[in-house]
Image 1 (cartoon, rainbow, N blue to C red):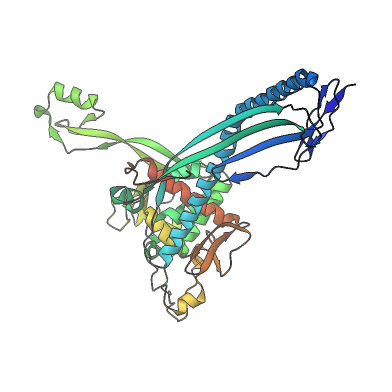
Image 2: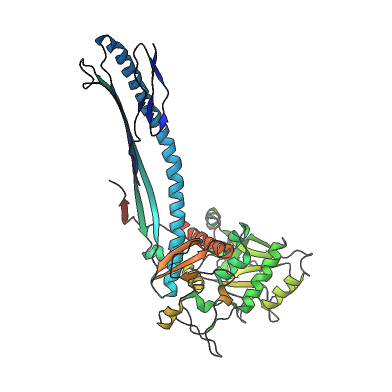
Length: 472
């Protein structure tokens, strides 16, 4: 008579094993406990069956049963080992990615709040993440056969064990010294405007965040530092940036880089320049041109110039005419160079009171963060305590900074932790957060993160000073 032995664990029955000619009742085992840890996991199974007394002639059959169970346990351990590696990579890589992204946004928001309270910002860059994965498995089976009354039963044992452990090591680098100055205090490169605009960012958002002045139009430059006591000027600049945005949405905005030759020296008497000098200059990437009267040579070099091109069909558009008028540009031109600097009446590009170039003064990354910190909704209790600066209008009353930054960023505050927040941090007993449905604010935070990454591209990293091994 054949008998089916079923091994059951955690309420589920394992595939049956048929044994003849003995009869053994089905084996049911209560679910085993399992403990999971943040850095690893382990679990074990132990199955036991007390059977009635069996004659000695059944030992070969029991031995075969045990061999089969042992082979099954080894197979399970082997299969678990094969799956653990790829599964660990798939799960951990996404988990680390999400953690780095969320903590980066939290760090940006925390430092914006600190700037509003005139506290020193601190940045910790994630230098590296090294994770070690360890998998262990074991399996075994055993039996004891004795003759005697039922109170001395035969014992069948099957044990399968496996363990999984993860040990990450995270390196954090504080941003300080020369790296701090290069990334946060240096003016943003002019080319950033073109790069971000070409990558799909709204030119209105880019200009208002990264530029302080444009041909004399002020973009709340006083907000590029601690909160000013007097209201800033920003209306005309905001109008120009919106007009550029309208052209961009219509596909009519053309910003491009052009290579231009410029003089690097004054006239050099031609008698003092040899052919070898000219060859050497050209081998180093420089050029040489003759003066108009032919008595001297001038050393030249190439440079990239950002240019706003205006096609003939766009030149008469109302948006273009208003931009030209607000920026004091000479009308009727097909292009205007965009240069770095402050425009004034002594500018050589000025003709008949009109300019032929657009001069921009960029903010630093720290200036852009100070500017956005005005979007923090400070609790009235903190204002009453004098923890922040209150900007006062000329006619009296508090100035509403939402007029300046409301179309870019809104950071709310409340006592309790918000439920639907894209990013939230706690500071001075309040939660500061960006609502998850506020796509405009989320876009501005993302743009600030990209600016931070762009500034990090050319900066040399400091040696790691803080390494956190997590786990045993």
